[in-house]
Picture 1 (cartoon, rainbow, N blue to C red):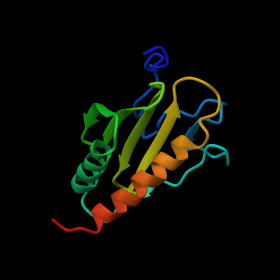
Picture 2: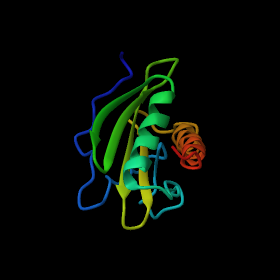
Picture 3: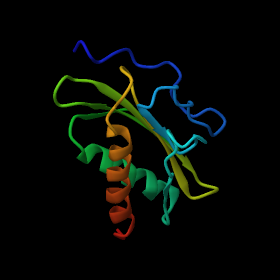
Length: 136
């Protein structure tokens, strides 16, 4: 996999914050304040445990995905592109005080992602919202 790149060392939530996006446009984050990188967090109306289980379930249902880290308020997964094996790092941080799940999706290599990271988070949002509306 020549396009996998190295796993970043700055991932994870630190004091409730995910790593900032790099200056390149191939990253979106719900904690970013600039319009290029800004995306809305996911909101949930269930217990934090169900919200995290729903996110995990959605992520696992998507193709070429591998969950790397799972904690009680954090999930980190790698998404691999079908064509050349580019890896994107996708993080979810659950803020139970605000009933939000903060998200960050970033390409490891290159400059532009042709909107892939933003599109991925919106797909996850849609599937997550559907799961949240389904009571178990």
